[in-house]
Image 1 (cartoon, rainbow, N blue to C red):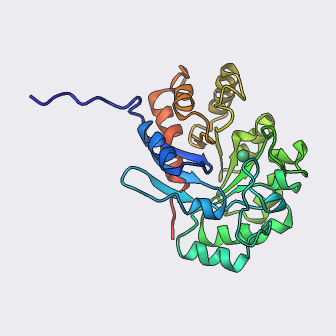
Image 2: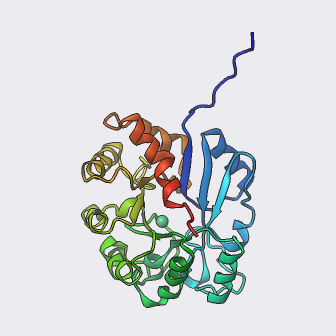
Image 3: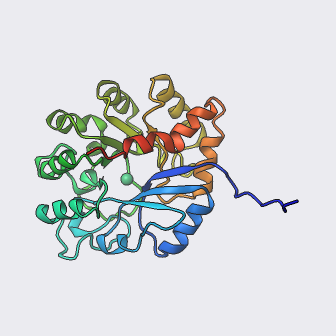
Amino acid sequence: MIASVSLPATSQKVFDVHLHGDKEPTKQMETLAASGVYKLAISTSWSLQENYITNSEITVLKGLMLPCPEGKVPYSGQYCFEDREDFPDITWVEKMIKEGKIQFIGEVLSQYYGISASDEKLFPYYALAEKYNIPIGIHTGLAGPEHGSPNFKVSLGKPLLLEEMLQKFPNLKVWIMHAGAPFLEETIAIMKYYPNVYTDISAINNPYIFPKEDFSRIIKTFIDAGFEDRLMFGSDNSDITMAIENVENLAFLTAAQKEKIFYKNAELFFLQKH
Ligand SMILES: [Zn+2]
């Protein structure tokens, strides 16, 4: 007889689509893997991002954070790029995409930067994402304290601001980060009309930001609106065990719906067709 193997805290497969850098990348990756995360999408300063490498447990998808307020990553304050510019050089970006060093564009920090998600300064990057069929993730909603971005505006976090870019780049795969909360009506309206728009549930699944009852109500609203195939799990560096448990505890979700949210929807969304 074989001795029984102890199972990890959760046996759930998780694709975490919303992660940022940590002071200890190796430890962060180990913690995530122990909770069932097998794939993640990370965006942070370009130099820190280089420390995140696919290993036997976790596949790493790398983003491109932009535009950076005063050249810096909000909250942590490192420079996004070596040249300390707010926007990365477009020729360099295309080269990085071609070399497979960028799998998505995001977190788009337009709200922190003080511009709309449909500002034309962003169009060259959106055009590249459309050309190479890579997704765009846009920060929406609110922000935590002390992000250090002087031009941040609440009104620039509204999901309806995506409409112009969605019309200009109709083939883009776009995800609304943080579900647009608290502007949920706008998220729902955009997702109803534009089937290529997904959302991640980071921030709303963090009980320190949104009470559990609010999270439950929001997910129920999305499910009732018919979006069970377009919700993606994200932790945004919150406690991963807690973030997973919050989804597990939603009694109205079927096991199949939970699987979609934990990884199946994200797998389809990030699938690269050539
Ligand atoms: Zn964000």
